[in-house]
Amino acid sequence: MTIDPKRRAVRGQAKHPHSLHALLLLGIVLLICTALTYLIPAGQYERITDEVTGIEHIVPDSFTFIERSPTTFKGIFDSLTSGLYRGADIIFYLMIVGGMFGIVNATGALNIAIANLLKLLRGKEWLLIPVLMIFFGCGSAFCANYEEYLVFVPLILACCITAGYDSLTAVGIIFISATAGYAGGMTNAFTVGRAQQIAGLPLYSGMRFRMEIFICMMLISIAYVMWRAIAIKKNPMTSICYLEDREYNADKHLNLNRIPKMTGRHLITIVCFWAGIIYAACMVVIKHYYVDELAGVFLGTAILCGIAAGFSPNKICDSFVKGCKDIILPCLIIGTVNASIVLLDNANVLDTVLYGCAYAIEALPMSQRAYEMFVLHDLFNILVPSGSTQAAVTMPLMIPLADACGITRQTAVIAYQLGDALTNAISPTSGEVLAALAICKVPFSKWVRYLLPLFIAWFIVSLVFVGIADQMALA
Image (cartoon, rainbow, N blue to C red):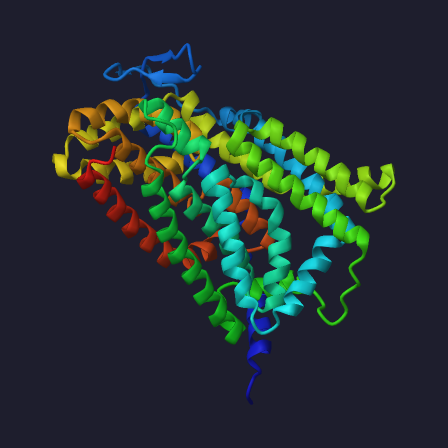
């Protein structure tokens, strides 16, 4: 008797073990970090604060080993609230942005607009992929957007399921392009801007070289996502997450044959929504807006969208609260990621890891040290996934090291920039990606399988650009 492939898949699904919840995965990371506090000796650098910028700098050659203070069992649980405090600005910012999307989603305006666009592109849905990826990539390269994109995940997921793609395509469209944007980072104030400030370089200097990195990374990324998406559209069962999508995401499909008519209120709501996003993006570049200012912009945008849709004050509040509820899991994930950093920092092992990195670089031949800087930044980013924090921790040490090795400071910044970017997409401590996967009900292990070929390509391209920068003595 021949069994229908779809029935076989569903039968197999019953035996398919449930994957680890994102919070359980991060719980394992916390235990690993706790173990490291017993294995890695404690140490610290002296630090001074720049009176002009207020940035704390490491004093090179000041490292000393100190008495070990490993994390206790109780300390693991204490770190959770500390992690939430540490990520409070991003967490509350995301809740406000989630509230904005709660109001916009309640109007139905975006879903109706997307459904009409997909209907218009029927048979050519692949055109959405490069357009969306360029949009997200530019937001990251110019405005340092990353965690902000979490609120787009449900909308892009619905688009991909309706177009015949899978949930991994949705995550890839957003966070693969965001990673490529961070790798280019022309005016990314929180990575390139911070690193160049510490290095004493003109702000956003070397932009042409970074533009070349961005274009190259984006072309590779777009080609990869499109290739995988088109293959899945031809045969959905080739998708790595076919079972998960059948069980959890089938109801995300938009009915293109029964699309409600777009009204004037819908159009005004969409105009208000995009005006708020464009204004926020411009202010990031012009006035260096950060989470507090951006949260204010999006809160105002949320209220305007509610008014444009004709909602009563009570309905605006109810929709806002519902949007906040939808973003609770990503917020908890970000807090737990920060808890792992708190554990390592409280045990004084981060400086020891940094000292070991510097020692490893000095042990290599001069011609290989720029490459080693890139690789070590990639690895260090797993422990410290925050770009601005990593710049503040590593660059005060890497800049004098680069000077001593004959590596230009601009090359050192390029090595940091690329190293900080790549592991954001694949690290188990990347809270934003874990949150997106949780929204899509996709296991982290399947995301790694999906991303790995592209990650290898990114890594090779990054080594090439670091080598070119080193050979050119990029200034």
